Image (cartoon, rainbow, N blue to C red; front, side, top):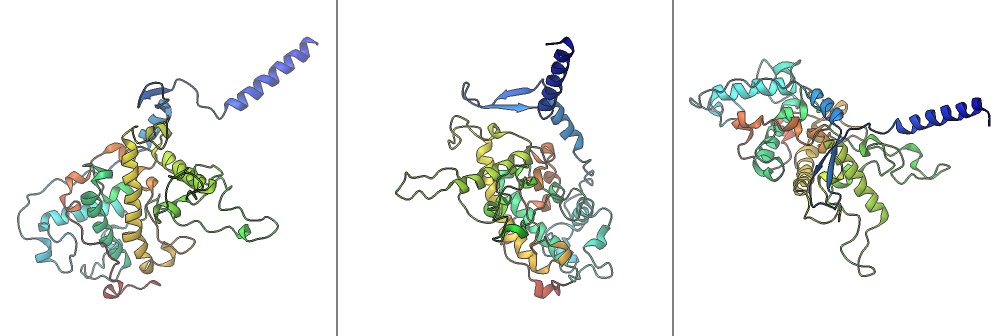
Length: 355
């Protein structure tokens, strides 16, 4: 074989090798033991990606300075204050200023309020905002199994946008899913962002974050006495896991004992994730889906549903939202006992769906 041909083959092999390695992460990587040694329970982190994630975190608005908890309450001074009326007037105003910065910094107070009559409920955004305040109180009071003492504020999800950028909507069924030449894709094989560009079922969120479907890859009983858990159910479960992994910027060992993924004697994060899934179901079903009727068409998804919460809505690529920044502690009004979950009274507000 001629030297020239050898050089060409070597160059070709190098090009092919570089192409194959293009999708790999270059070392050094950082590993951390997260469980029993010898079980593969090791978390892997790319320090360059981690640094980029931290750099991408938004600049959190400064909290208004605390005010003395004295004076008459907002509910005794102002009309139609149904959620934060227990706060002193000065602290109520402080909360309102912060919420404006968290949710609608460009639109200001007029995004929710009729400036000629702040007590007026004619704007659907005010009805939604009131319900979201109730939801925030509910999370901080009743879901400490997931948010602990860090809690959440409006900014955790909104981050300066009237609609959280990571809210999710039901995935419309593709036109070709009807029986025909292309057949039925079975709800998968679309390389969807919702499942980290895999071919797994592309709408696991509707299945698991609104419904009480069992999240499992194998049944609790042996065949043939009742185990009806199918391969497709397992694929939906893996789809949800891909969503969680991407949303938190972690791999499977962050929550799971790799010796046995169904075992609970692994990282404590699995229990936190367990409660997080159930919290998302609770918020979607009792607070967000009931708002569908008052949302105008442009605020609904392609199938006409309301925006809902998933792991990405708060986490946005890091395992602790906003890198664990505890904002709720500075706003006592966001942690008071929540009102019982119920659908908003749209009739009393005068809001209509076509508004």
